[in-house]
Amino acid sequence: SNMKMKYFDNKRKTGYQLGGFANYDFNNGLFLQSGISFVNKGAKINEDVLSYPIIVDQNTSSSELFNGKLKVNYGMQYLQMPLMAGYRIKTNNSLLFRFSAGPYIGYGVGGNTTLRINGTLGENNTPYFDKEKGKTFSDFAFRRFDWGMAIGVSAEFRRFLINLGYEHGLYKTIDGLDYRHRNATLSLGYRVY
Image (cartoon, rainbow, N blue to C red):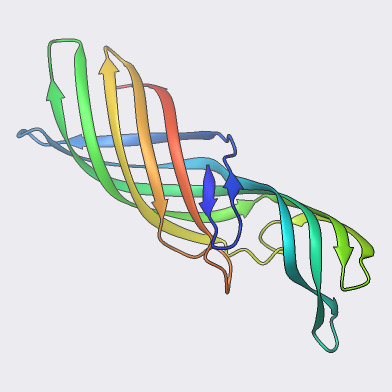
């Protein structure tokens, strides 16, 4: 998982998902799929920052330029539900491929974020260090709602499944900044019916 961020180059963060899905197959090879899953998303920032404004007085909103190292680790957990449509191809009695696309919606139910900056402020190069840790959705003002588009391809051998997917967030997850989720997924599963 990572996030499209306008001002910073972020790094991927490995996450997990756990859930269940149901397919409705039509006779002509088309199908619908939906379900619900618990998904871990996020991103990491670890970079040198030059001349970045930091507010030093909350009352006057005055700021000074910061130079130094910025490290942020965003963690977010969502309950997420896709609605996918697709086409299935059965190659023989035990191998089936599915190609799908559609929207997803998610609601943030938890997560933690850690922010650490270490460097200097202003023309006098005053040493500056700050570390904050808190809840992603309440302390760091991320929006709980998320939605976007997803695509996937899966293979089913007997009852075992493997799925490759990509999610492209369309909703800005924080006010005033262009932060959107981007997730590549690899899922393993077992069909119970």
